[in-house]
Image (cartoon, rainbow, N blue to C red; front, side, top):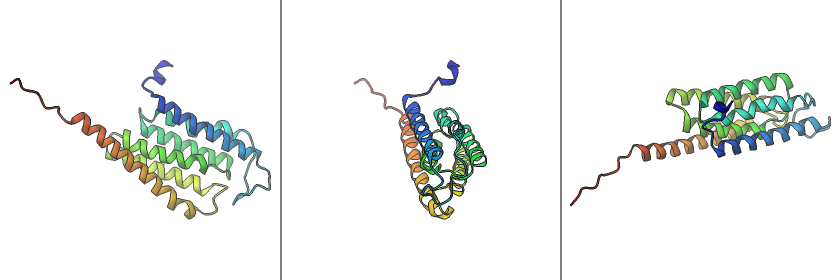
Length: 179
């Protein structure tokens, strides 16, 4: 059990806790919403079971430093499972920021370009699945033009940070010569 949390940093806990708390709140709002909720599509279910299932979507980001592809895959599978089980509910308020954070993580922690492409493809899949069955979004093309550039911006920021970190580690320190 101790091995599971080894190497995690405080920011990992903060990010996972913030997304999880926001997810629990959003799922609670879906449960509490009445049949006359002001959304683009009627909410399919008001069951409280969607709250613990949504934890499977948000908690994996805690391990983004260890294996970002596994985190993207787990998030994608949990998202698809949540959509299949619960249908039209509002998820975008948490899942789209989650995909943006994942895009940054892919740029920072993926091992090579191939892994980055795989991670970005998974992130795009998550965005499409979320937006396609979100009760608050009326059409797929209304949100993707915002979510994709936002993820690309944070991916670029992650690449910038990763290049700075790599440069700092690789740059040799000049030796001082005794005069």
